[in-house]
Length: 438
Image (cartoon, rainbow, N blue to C red; front, side, top):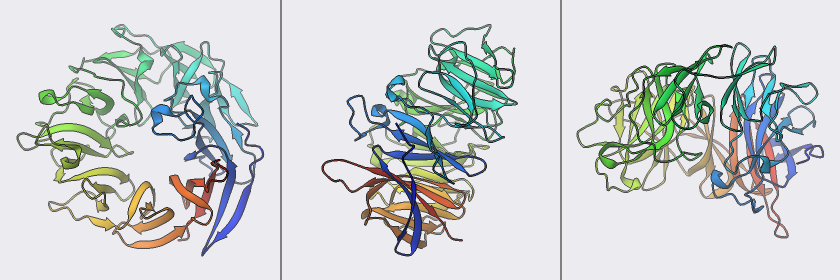
């Protein structure tokens, strides 16, 4: 995947000036900007194993990481061969406090730095994923899913060991970083370990969890995360739930090994839990619930609670949570029957006041006091709302593009992954940068 020929181009569309990076052969997803705002990491979806670029789900996707230069045109690929990774491989982005990037290339080698000043970390085994923890320590999943730890200064590597090995699998098969980076939590078939971000430290066994895992999970399930910097963690693996009702993920206390139940949430008698969705900062938790195990998805409700007190939540009928505005804070709902979007500020009052986001559809993006969505009636038009549901602005890209596939708000800019108008049965894609005026 050669990005060297791509050039930023400035355009005027109606009242808006934008920059576009056009000529891509594959869909592009903006992920994360560097701390200095000069670079943007993106995912390029290169299609499924048959070569198709029409991705029905992440399970079919082949994805590569690339770096987009936001000042000049020195773009480069962090990975160049998507077939070196599993079809459902989700690349991870690691910006260090000093602005360096930590990544794994298609040869399963770990690197630190930038294109001009990269340093191979000389891993002793092939690496699939690497994540920065804290104090120059990173955790890495090897190709055989064993868990390794590396000192980024000395380049010393060590395989993480434990006095209580997994009964099945390996420590690197499923691990999550604590929010402060001081340790990682590993989970395997009901066993848990706390693994300090310190060279030489063992993986400390935690209480076992009584749980029946019924699948591997995946990109469509809840993102695993530590809740509110505390002892509770959202594990994004499907399990056999209460009364035979399975749930997408579960919440567990690392110190007790106990799983949060409907009773712990003080839900009314007869309610069952079927799924979870946490805000990216871990402060809020949406729990999908139902009072009838045979009810279809369209008739489920949401219990929305602060992660610091699971009994302080509110039930919102007939909706799903589709997004969070962490800074506000606020939550974005989707009506399960009509598909209409709405926003409510947090914490919820006894009577939830939802402001309608008229004609809004995914994808969504957030900036301070602002929500962006796609116009349901026009897939290449952006709608900009405030947190009270008022429409502030529209941006129609339909003269150039067919649809908006992804978007990400970063500082004062909105980045859009768009699909061009098809010509000669060939699809083209672009990255659009729209700087939002105050």
